[in-house]
Image 1 (cartoon, rainbow, N blue to C red):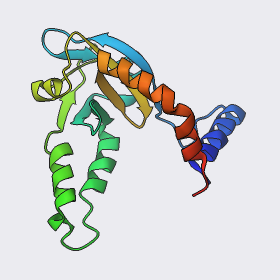
Image 2 (image 1 turned 60 degrees about the vertical axis):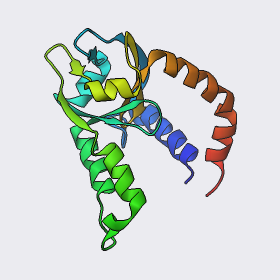
Image 3 (image 1 turned 180 degrees about the vertical axis):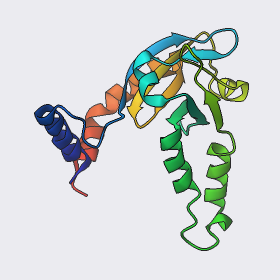
Image 4 (image 1 turned 135 degrees about the vertical axis):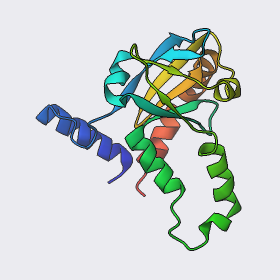
Length: 171
């Protein structure tokens, strides 16, 4: 089943059953929030319910940060450190990406009013100041510099049709 067919099927199932089936904890939506003087940003109320009291913030390959629930981070880190093949840690690409993502990840607490502290080194990496875009993308939240997010949206909207076509191709 192609990705778009799976999405359509699950939307149909949600409508029919009133339940999210496989997508119980889907994080979706876009929110603009202020970064306070102590580098804290509020998670949208909708996200707080699903994310729990502790999350992991990690650098993303794009110019943003990933925020994972602890459960999702466990899955991600397991896949990144999977040593299915003997001595796979000897592969430079794997080592380099693990250093990039795992080595610079940070587990943070969600405070009593739903804020998370963005570590300085991650904040500086994406030029975060003033306002941040928090974007739910299913299994994670992304934190973007609000201006970078606006630029990204403009560019990606131009490509949306071509991307949909590409994702819709039979594999």
